[in-house]
Image (cartoon, rainbow, N blue to C red; front, top):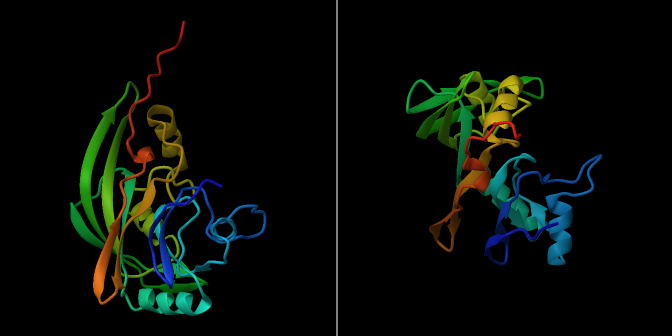
Length: 221
């Protein structure tokens, strides 16, 4: 496994930049995961504080002990940690700023789910047989439901590019053909944590995959 960047470390936690394609927790059928491989790399066991989807990249907190994991899980649950995501989506939202409030089904129960968004950039690509709108959207969660961002954006007809589970599979094939988009373009880009009596902000640049460019489809002679 390639080394995982560590942005911050103290006696309790590490703030890391998880790559896309790496599962957070080892499970059936997996040979690699963050909790297993990162622990081996460090030489001591790390404990999960929260999770990111396998195909979501970006900032995460992991703990050095069960006590620290419990403490920071409670801090996140009480909204003491601010998280912001960036998503590259296929489509356009009806407003530049807004709040999506749509219940999600989790464990066979309806759960409230609230996502705040701001459209940072929109771009249109025109090809011979189609037109593709892309939107770069910043998202802040007020609730933390599983796949909340992915489901909410898909329901707004603005699915995340590369999301074959909740998005538009047919559209993703077009995105792959014309723009070389091959993976889910969702990133945990900013974290604000209460540390040493003050709020500390951690930010990362957008992954290179977000910088999409049209593919030259001319046939080679």
